[in-house]
Image 1: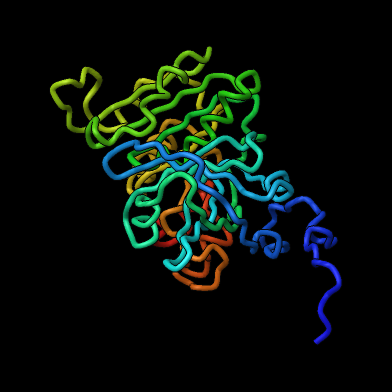
Image 2: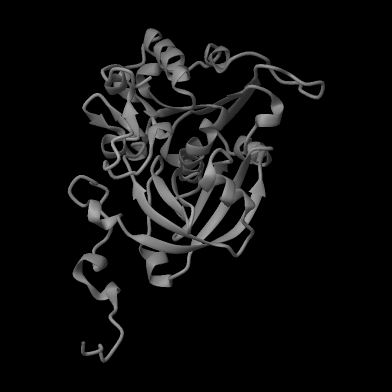
Length: 302
């Protein structure tokens, strides 16, 4: 075989020069590429969760990579496999990805053992996203339960960075107990943004807790906004969608203005393993973000 006279540069291919297209059905090849990445820093959030700040190594790939709030990536630990993780950070930081990861399986356990400087692989971004552009000029309810604040943090960052584009913003967050609160170092930062209201509730208080006790739906009862001029994003356990979205619907919010993430069903991200299907719908191809009207018509989705 005759050797190549010069290294082949894949970045010069026409397909590589085109910007990413988020219509995954027609351009899935654009995201089926592994980016070599490095863990820059790690922040311990709780006993089970850590926040990983990851940078794509190649500068040209770093400039090209982009995502929208609600999407996810596949994270590969060489020799151990890969796992789907929702992106938790701001999409204004080019080539930098923040991932809140719970230690739950082989891949995530190895990630929790990693140190800054460790190399990982990133594929994506995958999936549909929250329609933040459509929400501009309206009130926005951002509601999370437990680990649901991880995927919700990206739209929270979007609305705070583009505060003038939205009307009232309410962030409602509930967990089982105070030890499970995520991103607690950012709460005061969010509250200091004019027009942003943050309310937090726990189901079981400890001696140091001075806030409200109960479920996140009790916070929702106190919100005074015109629901026909409001959008809602709800992230958390699927059972939470049913209670929160049904409550909003009963109060007058159209179901197609509520958006939920079924990211917990993600597996391969490309519709190949068939483990995310709900009936004839592949969540990784059609989702993970759906409006609540669609979810209600997907049997066994929640």
